[in-house]
Image (cartoon, rainbow, N blue to C red; front, side, top):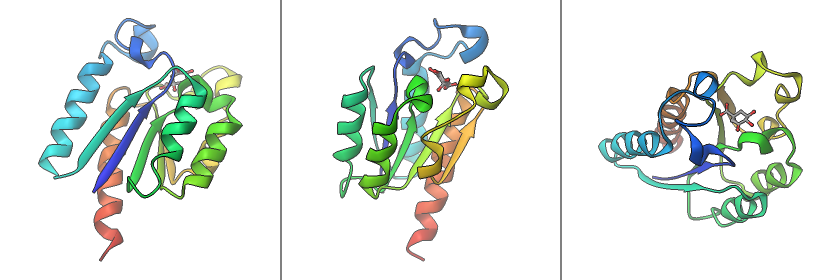
Length: 147
Ligand code: DQA
């Protein structure tokens, strides 16, 4: 099974960026832990980070036929990007939305996700663990798919 993880804008700054909101774990640490889990489960994991909306659209577009699942934290684009939403809808690759913070408990402008309606579901509010939970969910879904 092949899973693509996409980290959106400013997530390269994790650990240094508003640690009271996003935690002290760096993106490299999150990625290392995801890779470890994936290895144990014999999942091939590709991880990308981009600050650019168009680049994220391209990554999603390129995933068709190459990946069985996408895990994405669209970061600020969650609340603004029709382009990323359309890319997910067009890609036909099942997608899980992830957030470190609980976006529903924050400013009003963060409480709407344009991405969630085209995803299997959303995991929000568990810090770095949100990614592990998403990988766990993806794995479970992919296991059951061919049974
Ligand atoms: C975020 C939440 C977004 O509102 C914010 O713009 C981010 C990170 C999260 O993971 O909690 O950059 O997606």
